Image 1 (cartoon, one colour):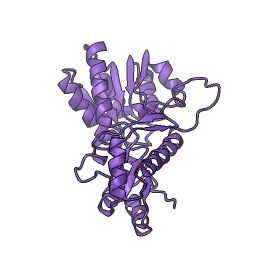
Image 2: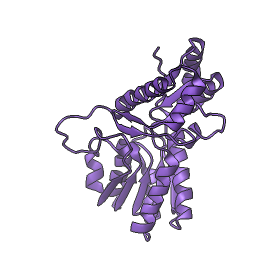
Image 3: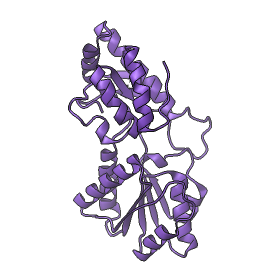
Amino acid sequence: AYGSDRGGADEAAAVAPPAVEHKAHVVIGHVCSSGAIRAAAIYADAGIVMIATGPRHPRLTGPAGRRGIFRLAGRDDRQAESIATLIATTYPAARMAIVHDQSLQGRGMADDIRRSAIAAKVAPLLVAPYISGTKDHAALVFQLMEANIDLVVFPGQPLEASMIVDQVRSAGGKIETVIGTDVLAADAPPARMIAATREFLVMLPWTGREFGLSLTPPNPPRPAEHLLAVAAIEIWTSAVVHVRSLDAESVRAALRKLGSTTVVGPVLFDDKGD
């Protein structure tokens, strides 16, 4: 069966029950954090194995009762630690701001980066939200320039990040360095971002050997979500073959214990399912 949660929590709550009613053995998805977190609780209560491909919010695999929930995406809090370490070692004197789009993913990531940065003794001078879809970011631009910010971390979308940085430049300011989470790992960064900054760095996601950042790829890569969905099916199938059963508890135990070779390379889950 196939269903779309349209990236929303309420929609996910509507999509998940039919999977339970049809006694699904495995769910591949969901893609967005808000929907995945809501649906995961339903699948876990029903004893259905879920292998998510996109959600990075720590809460997906956080609750102790969700031992049948697995994910192929990285965790936001682990990216946050890496970003904080990068800033502490390479840009310790930078005047840093964290700018996010107020989504569950963006806000959660911003909080994780702030906590990690404080722990690394490179606390941000500013944590500022913006409204997604807005084209005029004058108020935010004023905040960034008023604080003399020269390094911005964006856990948001590349187009909106490039608009903000470009508007800072148009107002006479200069953001020297932009650090983006893996959300900004587009096939090619926006031209405005490159023109408006000295450095544009991205925390690339783990998506295997066939997908990466390239300005002029000889062959356009298949979307990362497609590859991860294929990998999820390979992983579940491998576990079923190993235990010779569709029993959910047996399959869950095999997934936690066994590594798998997939289209995106070798995969091994930790005890939480990450």
